[in-house]
Image (cartoon, rainbow, N blue to C red):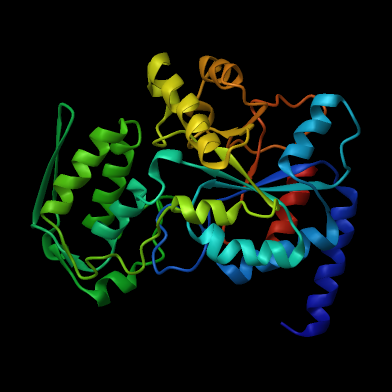
Length: 346
């Protein structure tokens, strides 16, 4: 694209954005590169830098806490406000995202899965075992609760680098599965999501026992922050830490006693680590089906002052502070993010 065309496009996008108003909370997960991203959680560092350039130049930047305070107090909300948040607590939030945030002076809230610090996220381990090069038995059979899941991998049992490279762009949003490994990943992801942490880990342990990945240590695997890294991330005050449960369950699938343990436990662990109150919470998965009214009551009762969902909308004076909507950001260009913001505010 010629420079003159790019300038015309940017002027047009700026004119559209000026007519669109409303505060928006952005939801990120990872800032990093990778050859597979089945759950679409990664935004490349250069893309993230574009996003920050856009919002610094065109938006009023504020922290999530300040946005929540404005809603609570009934004060004037910024006409074009943006707050930045991250879910889960990936190590690249420190390694890749924080330097870019610091360079632009953009505050962010990182919601941390308190019981998985220094551990692993089940969806990433599943991706490493199934979608990266390696060997599995031709017939994979796994017991999940009362169900036996059986998938014949055929020639994909021995999954070479060439075969894996041809389908790296596959994600769970694709309608078709290019092979049996993607089908198995989709089936397992759907069945593992509502399970308790220990049962999920038992299934993954059984899968790991019959898998011989070419990268046994997961050289390209994503990982959660360690406690020391989390403390570095939150140093100097630009980044606030919020709670995201202990083990990242679907809260609505749990009895209230277990929900309380996950919600209150995450708050207690993080407050012990930092020696200060943790006021913000984010519901794992965050969709309407993943938490309910009883979950909200437990979050409020635990002492959180606001909580974020994964439901797309802008923030206004009547926004429920325990159901703050967010725009889930993918690996978009800066112009695409501008378009999405304008569309959301229209």
